[in-house]
Image (cartoon, rainbow, N blue to C red):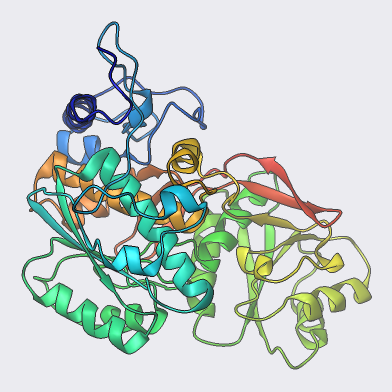
Length: 450
């Protein structure tokens, strides 16, 4: 008898193969992969450094691989079966499987518990928030669903709480999650004030938090998941230093965010024997002329200038640099430049950032399942749920500790290589681009990373 794609017997067999493969990857050394990049069907969401951290062995690339479930070999004579999405009670399919867009808020809120595993995980998402905030929250929900169907269904019980996009509500839900004694790890919140509040709390017994907020610096036990401006600036500076540049200047908006950016850039440059000659804060209201003049007075012939923009635009500083003329200097921007329309003044600048059009090995399967193209929100959510499933598989419900999460070999996800630091920040290896004719042109598929 021919089995249909969603026949439960095939799904159960596929799930057994996935779990068996996942378990073996966390308990045995594997031969290293060659090269820095991997084929679309060669890897799944996370290649974890847990082998080295937990098993005392490690590949030359520093990470073992959790495979894409669709690439796991089926038994002889049987075709492999793509993972089906998690389904709500009663078997009805959630709307995103047919609508070509993120799951609706109503459908998401009707299915807030996924999986039946022994490891309890709480995820905080703005499912019913208005506008793009809610849309991104529901994309993250779909990413979590796919990760649960792929890897977490029998390992995790994932409880999703709707923050409604309200920082106060997100803070209350997050505090409840870390004090309940139930959740082994908390994924979210995506509201920055709520994440910052958690970072200020003390307590050694609380579960780790994998915060999804933009531009969150992190804190002890509260890890920043998303790419930060400090990370982008450091990766860009390292890539240019790797090409021979030695003297760098950093320009940063005045304020509290300047210190972590300076620290990260200086550390990245030191690896290559390059130096950060000076860090110059600037005000968004002075037109950029003062900071460019200060650079001319303090540093003779820098090789490169890194320009962080914070929540503002870098164009005033770029215009002042262009007006000064003189010897051409390499300009290094950050991912936050790209929050605004591409300006002609960006031309020729280098930027290290995630390639949002390429979510790695989950892209094809996600689009086939949910009928829309995944973006970085999907990828972040998938990676954090897959990471949780990997830890639960390798170390059990009590494996969510600093030794595992802060291991120096890091993890490989659909968003690339990353690792968490003891201060809660993350480091990422990412593609490196040059702005040419108003577009990002790929220079390197992967910065040297860490």
